[in-house]
Image (tube, rainbow, N blue to C red; front, side, top):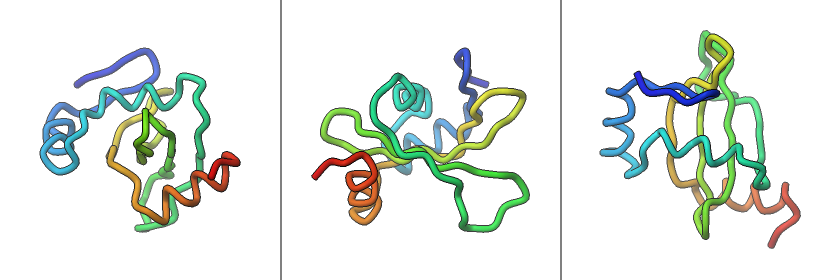
Length: 97
């Protein structure tokens, strides 16, 4: 189990995320460091737990972090590059072009 003060992730899920998306779950904390971000409740697929989506840019890349609250921390589900439509929604939400 990997964790920081306010994030946690499963090591197996981290390894799978690196293979699938090329990103370690540990960098998700950077999305909450004060940079502009878009947070919203995830509506698909239906889950038994409440899930959230956080979009934020790191450099030129807009990332999507999917997570849930567990034991007072953000528990990582996935971290990937945002799709074109997601990047557009993020830019519109933060007032960018």
